[in-house]
Image (cartoon, rainbow, N blue to C red; front, side):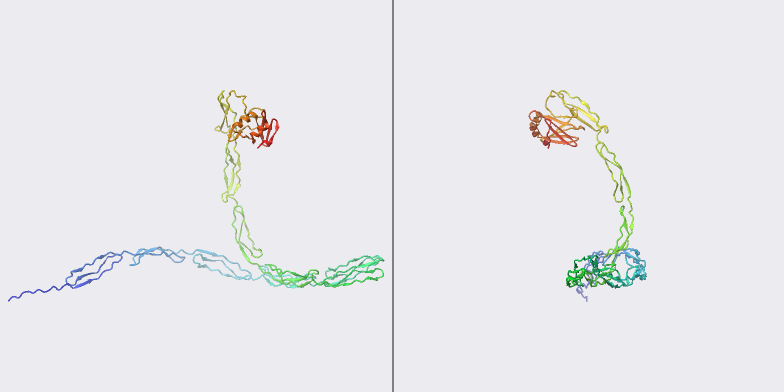
Length: 529
């Protein structure tokens, strides 16, 4: 008997997850997927994820030092550490040697030998060694004996190099005067006497001067009053007989005045000199009431005087030192000679007719100081030839004449020759020379001013009549201005005409000394402007 086949249901897929693969800098990744572990059918397809690419990070450059190498700037990936730009080694720079100046020892302080170090990293290359202090150079300060009025000093000692006091001199008080009385000599009838005086038996200083007592004669004699002092009484005036010594008027005792106290100001010590404390004395007899005591000197405070480099004209100075308190020079600055100028020649420029020239000069190429000033050579000026006619004047037409500069033929002057016409008798202005000959002139009107310009080198005279001034007023001319090589002068037309009258004449001239105006042969300079 046959047996029919029965349907067996499909088992279904056995799902397995395909893990996602993360992309790297240079390789792609995959998304998560799924497949059947039995038949390998892909259930969820894995998709490709693009590579992320490198994440660039800069590797900072490292500067080399004196003893260690450095690195150039580089780059790498911060994710996978792949080197993108390799850093290159920079060699060590080596030390930059600087000299450490030697320091001279003093009396009490040690010095140093010269050394060397690196100015970059401060590594000591040559160590400075200590130089022992030199010690003081002892000098004896001689003792000074006191006198009657001045103090003395005991013997002392100091260092001749640094002036340090090694053994201070002590003040010995003044000995004071040894007083001796100079006996009074009584006057007689015929001989003078002396009052009592006093002096020092050691120094012979007069302490109380002896006064001359006149001879008494046989009449009354005055006993001179004695002024009191600080410590001694005085006497009032008295009288006695010089013959019999009878007291006519007794002298009375005047009490001593006592001392007048004055303060002796304290003196501050300086770097090299001792000072004094405040004291007191009598201003009348100079007795010391409170002695001043000596204050030791302070010693110098050293400051360096910087060196000054010399220039072309000024000397320089080496480095020195001085005391900042009293300005005493401790180490003199020595003069460095000036360098002197570096001379360069400035070429001369020849003058022309119209332009000035220059002489040859010189200057320093370093500091630009002018060593030889270029002086201006005045323009030569035109050397004009004689006037010659280029176009002859006609009865109704003006002509022209020209002159040429003898220095430069390209320079010329042209002026107009008036038409011959029939107006020779018409009133007009004239410019006359010393021979009363007419000279050429030009006129220009500037507003109400008429300028009359004459280039004739010698003195000329501008003349005119009342008639021509009336015509000028009709043309609006108020001011007449005469311009010559000697100068310029101005005059108002109307006041001039008033001074001239209806039939007058004026003569106007100008020299380097001044201008003159004659009206009807009378000097009238007050009309000049």
